[in-house]
Image 1 (cartoon, helix red, strand yellow):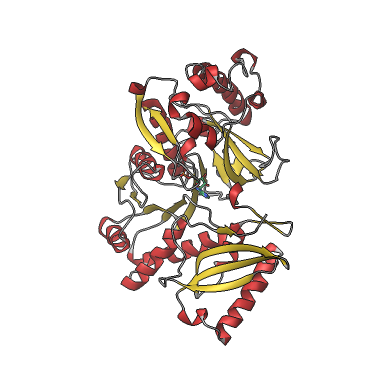
Image 2 (cartoon, helix red, strand yellow):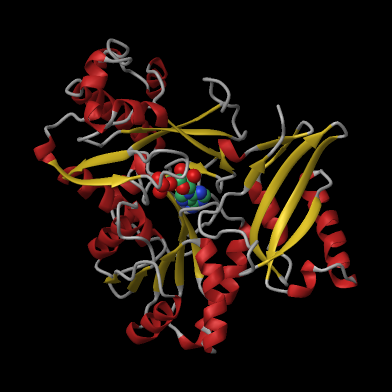
Length: 437
Ligand code: AMP
Ligand code: ZN
């Protein structure tokens, strides 16, 4: 086990019993405080949980769930426990699944969030000796400012690079001696082409040793591919705007799942189609409650994100619960001929091939003859988009490899990148379900 680093040793090394007790105490405090917000005082939550009767964290199940639709329908003001004058920052979700949801933070909320990001960074061995390049959007998206303040709190030299010009990122890395970068996995893959075109090898021509990959699902295979190219350790960083953003969950040096900081969040795994917890080890929908949020506390938020718990203690010594890499979102789960398929399984197979990109679209169709599933894959190799022996060979190999991963026979179509029919990149849509119900 690698050497251990802690930003807040007291909170990070609490025993399970201490964490349980702290959660109960903080849930009580949050329930009391939430009575200041109209939605909790007068809405669906009213009278559901008397703080005096909370003796175990399981008592949280007496509260109703909060959904994205609830947050949209009621608007952020209904959830505020403080006047707007106490709010110092607003963030919004990306709105990929509809109208964006806004989350309001007080200065205490920002301090708590920032500490969690700093903890994640310290946990993987980063310190003030490091130079951090944040290749994330600095607007309402949480990945920009969220990572930025965590990095500064840790004392790292921070470059607020933002997204955009790829060659400039490489130039910045070389000029300032960047040792750590935060970026989306799909962007890490596409940036490889810029490195190659410029003749810069990140392994020898930069000081990069650590990457944070966040904001979208990616497979272990994709992580390994990125690590190999950059010659850096890549850590999964998962968060969502409703739970601050980055800092909710992170990988420690044991790299066996992601811890959730349970001193600030309660995490449940619920049957995506129902309201009961899933059995230990099963995939379920992650449901979160904020325990330290002052301005806009949220109880039992149905994230639509799918993962499973990892049982047992972690090699790093932290007792905060761990979850697996995300399988995707509930809306991304395909049921095809009775079989559950997750886009991440397709990505895992594609990442083992050269000549094609990681960008793909799963098309589902049906007619009198039954259901059909086609995987459309971007390629830079023009030849593959024509009927030839090479495309035939690759197609057969992919069909075989996908069959052993998802237990279903698919059709494969190659589409040329940069051509008119190329698939869109960055937080791409993975599923086009054209089936008639
Ligand atoms: P947003 O609130 O708009 O930043 O989007 C948050 C969503 O992005 C989460 O609910 C996840 O679905 C997805 N996401 C963020 N980080 C990761 C990650 N490391 N792995 C998989 N999905 C992620
Ligand atoms: Zn750990």
